Image 1: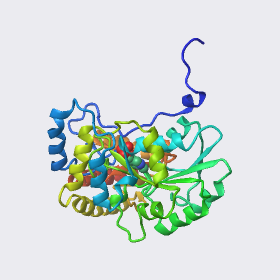
Image 2 (image 1 turned 45 degrees about the vertical axis):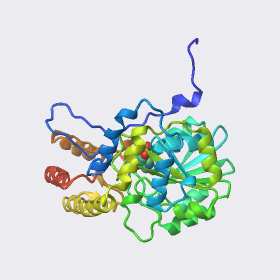
Image 3 (image 1 turned 90 degrees about the vertical axis):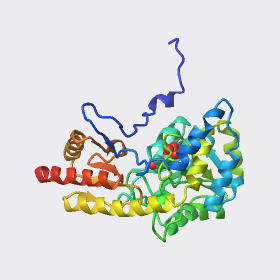
Image 4 (image 1 turned 180 degrees about the horizontal axis):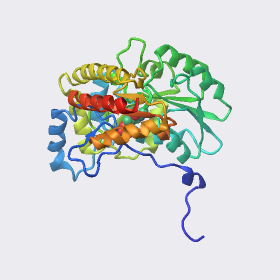
Length: 363
Ligand SMILES: *Cc1c(COP(=O)(O)O)cnc(C)c1O
């Protein structure tokens, strides 16, 4: 064969499937398929984005110093231990490439976030998926899966798409049980939504260890999924590694400006969190009343279980006729489920009503 060939493991990668955003033949579509914040981008972030338009011939600050300082202030962290990326996916890729490779293993859980598998395989790492318990990461099973080849454990907390989480104590137990040379990556994309006293986003474990990283994103509560901005909080040696391998200008001028402004928007986090708590509960209650099994979620989405693949598919098709786009999660080993983002009050009432009606004819 005389065409260029990638490394053999590349062709084993299944491309990431994102939430759909358009439906043919429907006037108004409501997108509840990608966990984008219910309120869109904040006014301040939009203004900051527009204001960068005259500067976009300039390269961005490659060190994202102002953005790291703003994150540090907001979350009470040392900016020198923050690395920004083109979304947290970017940083997950860099971690997988830097701490993986042929002959090594990456551990994730059964219904863990799919980027770990994609980025792990890309790196040439063997990706080991560990069974969960009640759709929740199981610390004992993760620890039992550790082998001499294990280089990293990736865990989303709370997890997408299950919405379940590990408590701070469980995460601590995981860290304590892992060999010191195994990197633990805590992907806290939904941390801003968690309202439990027994949760920590990962800061405490990063501070207490030199082998643990927390990744965060501006794509969910901060409403900037389209800008691609994420960050990692890590021990200095891992910050050093990321700064060697990441793209030198990985966060655009507009992305940096919008993210700084999003953090400064008065009351944004509180407003989003309050809305999410109220409407996540309303959605959960409505779906349960309709006869659908819904687990407790700590994120800005719920996982609705329809019992059979066929019923989940039928529910999805029914929602689509009403312009409601939710997320099928077959690729996550959850073919009987649909993941539904907590949208606006109106969107939650539309999706609740539609599924209630669906269940009347399919219960
Ligand atoms: C949405 C999400 C991310 C964030 O991805 P970005 O690249 O920052 O947009 C990371 N991890 C999980 C589990 C997510 O659901």
